[in-house]
Image (tube, rainbow, N blue to C red):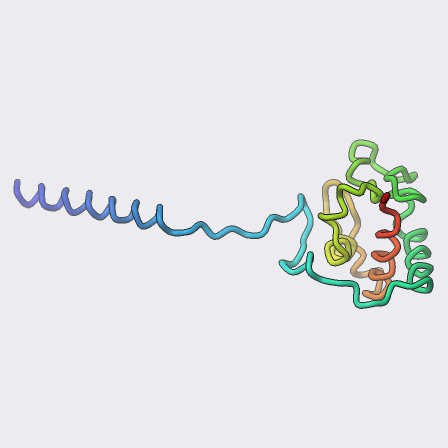
Length: 145
């Protein structure tokens, strides 16, 4: 009987020690990923390596017209011919409230990797990095001030 009591007390103390230890251990969390996007941890800090000038913006405008306008619309409002009307708000590139969440690096990786839902095609096989950076620069000019 004493042996059983000793074993039970030991198990209770072990359980208590594990509970206290778990409570005092900080929880490791991953940085929040915007819904469905595949972004590296440093995406927000990644800067456009190109100087934004008229030439870069013209190149970005051409890429946007060819690859992005059909969904995002000519002014980036999410009203293109292939736009999903159920997620138009997500497709609106002009919303100034989204500016803080969509730095150059975040936009770059969104264009590069795309996502399933709401649908955004990945352009990593179709566009060169310089082309993506040019469209990033152009898209940033569409934001309402």
